[in-house]
Amino acid sequence: MPKPPAKKSAPRRTSARELVFGDLWEFDPAPETADPKLKKRYDLFINGEFVAPKSGKYFPTISPGNEAKLADIALAGAADVDAAFQSAQKAFDGAWGRMAGSERGKYIYRIARLLQDRAREFAVAETMDGGKPIKESRDFDVPMAAAHFFYHAGWADKLDCLAPGRRVAPYGVVGQVIPWNFPLLMLAWKIAPALAAGNTVVIKPAETTSITALKFGEILQEAGLPPGVVNIVAGAGETGAAVMTHPLAAKVAFTGSTEVGKIIMRSLAGTDKKMTMELGGKAANIIFDDAPLDQAVEGIVNGIFFNQGHVCCAGSRLLVQESVASTVLAKLKRRIAVLRVGDPLDKNTDLGAINSREQLERITALVQSGVDEGAEIFQHACKLPAKGFYFRPTIFSGVTQSHRIAREEIFGPVLSVLTFRTVEEAVEKANNTAFGLSAGVWTDKGSRILKMSTELKAGVVWANTFNKFDPASPFGGYKESGFGREGGRQGLLDYCKLI
Ligand code: NAD
Image (cartoon, rainbow, N blue to C red; front, top):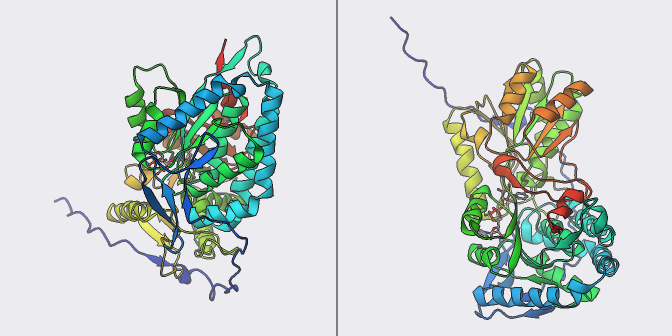
């Protein structure tokens, strides 16, 4: 007689305290003190000036770190978006459209320098509005945003070298919509190449992180950028749709979820707008048994817990070779048990706040699905602040490819661990996803790196490192992660017509 199926045991929640000896040393609080120079109210930036929305409507933006209200943000309606496009078109038809690349380059360079001058102020504003740790906004987001402007300033007078044998020309007005995970950096990725190529811009930041985008308007004024070259409108999905579908938008560039990307693509089907889409991801970080394991563990931690996992290219699936799986898992657990989760403005903080209550609920629901589907959960046992949106670093082991946590983008600090035995199995599992944004390979063998990087269907493959960026290096996806590139020569070409 067949045996009755074994009863599924309840998932075991391991406490970090089981794994570390003694308590984590307490550090004195070290809050960043630079003044973010926040205003109580932010207006739209249209035609070189801050203007009240025609609708008269404002919406609050709060700090996810403590839920305190930071400012009121102007809500752009269709009439405001139209005014922004009219001003961008006028600037394109006027002085900006006729300006020599060498002159445009000077403006872009000036923007980069001004951003550097006000770097600390922007970093604090970014952390307060978005929830990311100050050490990330200070050491990564703001310097990288400035680096993108520097890089593209250098291209503005060399566009003829972009495509040898062809002439290049700007499209005209570009409509851009960006997400909340790297608010200023995504803005730089969008605006810098657009300006270098000679386009003008209407851009919309995400509704939960509008402050640094609108502060950026102050930098444009300081740089003396001609009115209308860059226009910044704020609001949620409706405003974003108005930007993407405006008749004057010759090209649109979107970064955000695959779901919204598809809505935009459907709404633009049949138009002649040029499009680039930077969408979601479900990256695999693949560890072979010959990898330097301690280094790999640091890479995995950086890959998924950096910015609370609010990273499109986050290494959210760990594929580890079976022979070293238990060693790697033990090292990982020990490592996350000493991560500091808390006040984003504290310089000691490793993981700050989740960007919004909605995102926290989405992460919580997906983690619950992992527990319900039978994966084994390990969570950092740290105390979370009483106010604000926080989530413990989480590792799931015993994950199979059919689990939701292995298939869906969680966009939070949650790692799903799967195992493999052969190179072929690793490639197959890594590619078994609707996405294709990035991947990581950890091995001692150069030939294996080359094989993996040609067989993995991902726009970026990092070898023995993870989450490394450079303005000269193109970034973008395969499959449902989108199309088009940002950064490098390829990214700039996406803002140019070839003649
Ligand atoms: P989201 O798609 O919800 O929102 C992104 C932006 O689109 C926001 O500004 C939002 O207001 C706007 N929007 C919403 N509905 C819209 C509509 N119908 N028309 C036009 N605009 C609309 O994404 P999110 O939650 O803000 O960001 C997280 C997502 O972004 C993740 O999926 C992540 O992977 C992705 N992302 C991708 C990259 C990349 O380079 N591939 C980079 C960063 C983030």
